[in-house]
Length: 180
Image (cartoon, rainbow, N blue to C red; front, side):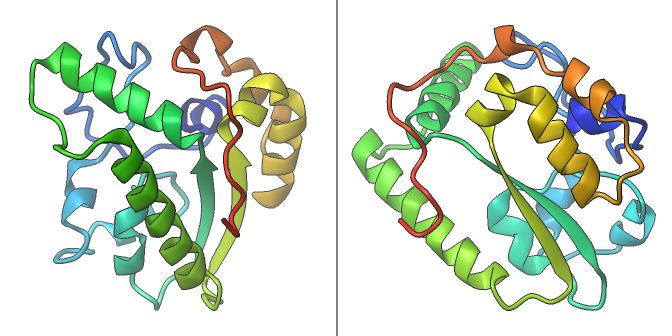
């Protein structure tokens, strides 16, 4: 998603500390200070008009006095777990001690909490994008995104940034909808 938005001309607020690697050859587009959002939101002033990757557990720490356009990426939970497991293996580090069923259950509960939290937020406009749909139908999803973001982005450039070859951890089941 970050590649798509940057490809269409948006500026990403990143620090380039996490460099491209085997798991993400095009880079991570991350900003380390975002991880401290609970205690330090000072960087948000610099983010106005830019795109920033924020993981869902940190969304609740976004200051209420600002307005946000949120692109909420959804992906099959089995794919997320498989992808994270491979990244942990490649780094030679230890992963979570939970079994995949427990991780799936915990993540589903987390998603429910996020959707409940987002519900009444008048300062956060949200579009939900299914990762598989993005890979399978990049032009259509890009058109929806361009419209959501005010119609000023080039949907063709966004769609051209999609590389289906990077979709390596595919699950055979579909992503549960927001109400599950």
